[in-house]
Length: 632
Image 1 (tube, rainbow, N blue to C red):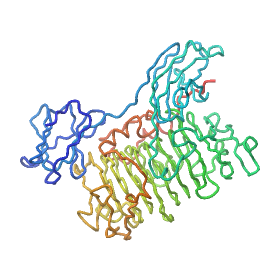
Image 2: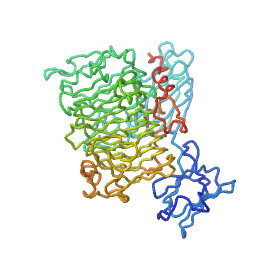
Image 3: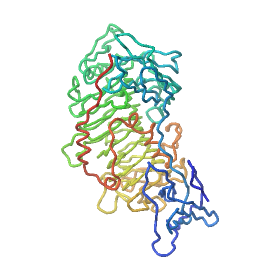
């Protein structure tokens, strides 16, 4: 017997022979499990088919396990029902509450600090506006800063009723922040306040972007800026006027180079290939299309382009705080290596939110919030086109910890021109009621792991054109078709296929399926049909797929990249049942504190809906930050 009170995580192995979902005490036994609800404590019973049954723990009396007979009985506090599972429960767990981050120890003087926390290689602090103070100076201590050290002025911002500062580029460790008000032009240290004991964690640098590569973007792997990196701060007011020196020939030297004005022109300056100093572009507030100096891509907006294929750029585009965003345009990357994007939102983009178009490598895109784009010409572009597309022989790409809000077509991964192999991974993302292409894979070799598929109206992972996908330890909640291979298995049934192209191969391991409309989703595996399967269900993570298993259309085989230690990176995935709590938690997907734009989907109406949500579109189109400006 399991006493359900005060449990955190528990897994108990029981018999795995599949006889029935519930023991048949008479005809059509009832199922009293409930829908998944991350806001309450629930017990999870995982079945041998990968399905997860949820029960609210405060409604249960006990859970009995009979190992001899292989049964699991769920008994309520009230009511005369008893859900008994016969020989098909493989594990039992208790859902974790999503992590909310640790609050700092606050010591208030004259300034009233209201909130302070450490995050991922950063920390932030908020305070009430103090009477008589015209500005504030922010100091950081911890890590390499033995004593309180002043931070960049641009990090301290005014939001009308409160001030806020976000310090980035911190190594993992414990930090303190001091806020000193400026009164009559002088720092008043007697009125200073402190936030102490803030824990800063490292980003997860696991994925193909980091495979055999150190320091993607402007930062070293320890989270600090590279020694020779420069920083520019960009706001709506300065996007046209911000300046930076970018060397344009071998004759130019630091301090005597060409100075470019405007964000797009600064990035364009890197295309010559002579500037080797890394660049951190820090976005403050919302930058709208009309704020920009120019766009070099008429279809996407901001363009980052190297001199030739896979040119090292060492550029990080990062948001400061939880309200950094671009609005009315997206980002196109071509011929570039070592690019990082993190902690900003993308609203109302032109065609794609982010397009990795041609000959890119070691690109790390993470902790973004991506919303609706502008409607395109085709019916399937009503929510914009691709949220994050990757093609044109781009390789060693990682999309991680991104929160997608009802994306229509999340990600096209590959075209028909790739020479390959092209290694891409998607991990720890929150596909929040988005529709399809999670991702849609052509030709590429792709690792899809630890993602939360949360109400997917059309399909999850789709493979065509000889692509290979390892779909590992993902949590599929209310996902219509978690995995599809073109022209075979589920895709070949009913009303047709998601693609008329040849198929590929999907290897599946450790995935779970919950709240599916059919109340018992089971993928078609090679054990059911050796020629007409949705996926090859591996018995162990490191199982190789024999070449005898081929795509029904096209005859391609799986390339077993994931079992080759020279091809796959070192990583430690979560169990699938732990994924929702992590992804929706403080360190999971999306911007810091899940961004300043909040939207909750109604699962009952939105799980199977792939139409445009007009109120969400209106909110996205009309979004603006509450930022007033930077304290002088």
